[in-house]
Length: 76
Image (cartoon, rainbow, N blue to C red):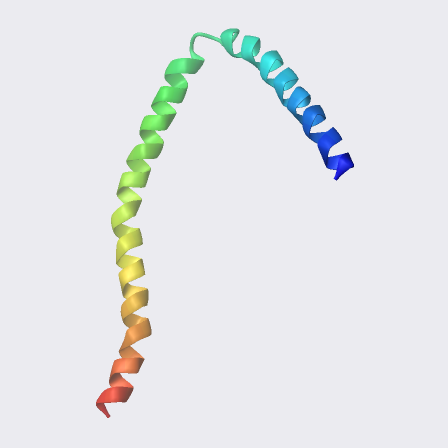
């Protein structure tokens, strides 16, 4: 338990050091990176919107296929 109490402050200091060292790097990005990521996000969201109906249809099909044999056996 004493070892864990010593590791937690060490890990907190490492995380803080990494956070403070990464923050200035974000400000130095190229001006074209922002719009590129915005366009990428728009494209990914459009793809996700197209996948939802397929995912729902496949899920319903699996549920029906799973329940059909049970209902068929009860009917006989």
